[in-house]
Image (cartoon, rainbow, N blue to C red; front, side, top):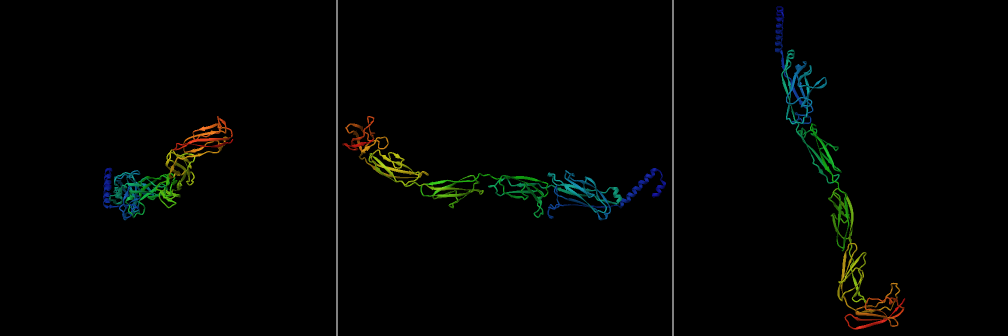
Length: 514
């Protein structure tokens, strides 16, 4: 047939028609002889951090799954035939380095990125080819996105040449968003003492790690504390206020969270324990309390007498106390319960012979350093140890002696009722020496108990040299402002007694010696 057509038709138009007929004829022959093949297209997700029975084991997590291997396999009877399979990438996941994913093919032992549409080559004597898919975490909540790897038929010429064709097939790879990762951290807090245990805890929830079961072989969450470790729970012993920060992520390492917690360490003033002196005025229990400045509070006490209270009640003695605050700082103080009891006062009294209504008091209170005295006579007072007192009137008088200690002012008193009667007493010295030596320079009779009194002094010639009506007046041995002569002088006292109207005399001599 072909020869006939070529011999009879020799013009150009005829030759073209014959060529088209031949082409169509051979196309029909090859089309009728081709065989359709379906390629095996599958993928494997390498989520080794999930157990093999976990629901997330074969899930493609956005920006988490390290290795997604797509395997395209041809039948064994096509082993010797090289295939260049057209493909197209579709779906709502966007291809690109900074988009949702990238897909790579191996070529000459290198990895090259694949475009949206091109050819996947399976060389002769290779049954399969592997593609690697990497997903990117874009920090957006987009629900599940899909990659469509669409394998298409061979080009017509190739199909006719090889006598085979490829049945179209689409592999769908769902990319699942990572669950949101949240970091919970211990709130800021204070410890009581420097060096106390400060337990801080970081806790991640959610993320891909939250989908892992307890049978995981690797930790679902990772913590990196600033210079203190990688455990979720840390126990520190800060001596000053410190901030602790943690950087945390889950198994994917895409969501990185960080937070800080401040542990406040209070600074206390130094502990100072002070113990003074408690004064008691009788041999009874006295209260002694420790005074505390600074420290952390929550104090405990250890006294030398065994007490554990802040105050003790005990008899006079010296005591020490060890004070320990809530942070184990200690200080020791010493003090005393001091007995400052006053001695028992006692006195006796005598009539002053030359002083009407006068009494002399003798204080027999036991001696004590710094002891002070207070006498209450009813019509007057005195601070002398052994006073004398002239009462305003005769009668019964309540006299009280109060003694007071110098240290604590402890007091005791003693009182007695005494009768004061008016009395008469007259005494005259027999000589005096008016030479200004402050010893016996004056002449004066000692007189008590008189209602009326007058004194006369005469020289040996009977001349009056001194005269007075004052029982306390004294003669200084002068006459008209000049020293009187040595010698013997005569005195005469004219008097009447208390409660009496009789006037009488007392007379005698006194020697003036120079």
